[in-house]
Image (cartoon, rainbow, N blue to C red):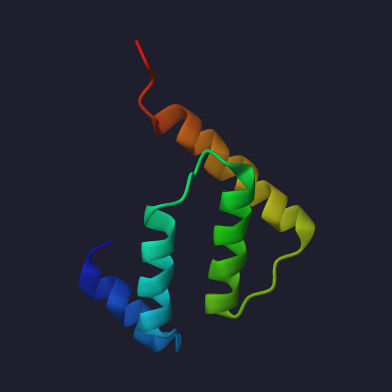
Amino acid sequence: MNLNKVMNFISENNIQPDAVFALVEKVRYMDLNDEASIRQVIKDVSVLAGKNLDKAEENKLVRDIMTCLLYTSPSPR
């Protein structure tokens, strides 16, 4: 997805761009191998999007993200 599409999506969904950029800055320095950090990002994104997630949805997202990170992170050799 290119930046124009992202910005259009943000605008069309009444999401505050400054809030998105603040979240991006916050995530840049997070330890994304830490489950609590991932849960916090998921909660922050759900607030930005105005969507409520139940615990089962949150757990699935955490599991999917952590699995993805496991397989895409460089491994020491």
